[in-house]
Amino acid sequence: MKEKITEFIKTHPYAVIGCAAGIIIAAIIMLAGFWGTLFILILGGFGLWLGISKDKGRNVADSLFSFATRIKDFFSGLFNR
Image (cartoon, rainbow, N blue to C red; front, side, top):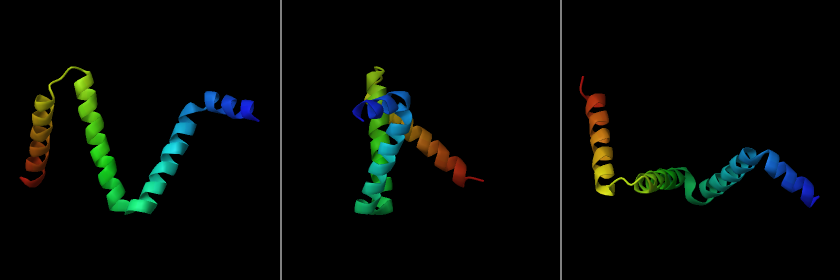
C-alpha cells in the first residue's frame, strides 16, 4: 500500500501539491473567513515577491519603489478618463 502511494505521488506530484494546497486554503477559509484568507494570501504573495526579488540580487527598497510606482500608475490610469 505504501509503495502505491509513493508511486502515485511520484507520477502525479502537481496533483498532490494542488490537492494539499486546496485543503489548506479551505481550512484557512473555515477558520479565518474569506476576507481574512484573502488578506493572508495577498500578504503571502507580496512576501514571496519580495523574497524572489532579494534572491535575484535586487535591492528591496528599489523593488518596493518600483511596485509602488506601478500601483500608482495603475490606479491613476483607472480613474483618469
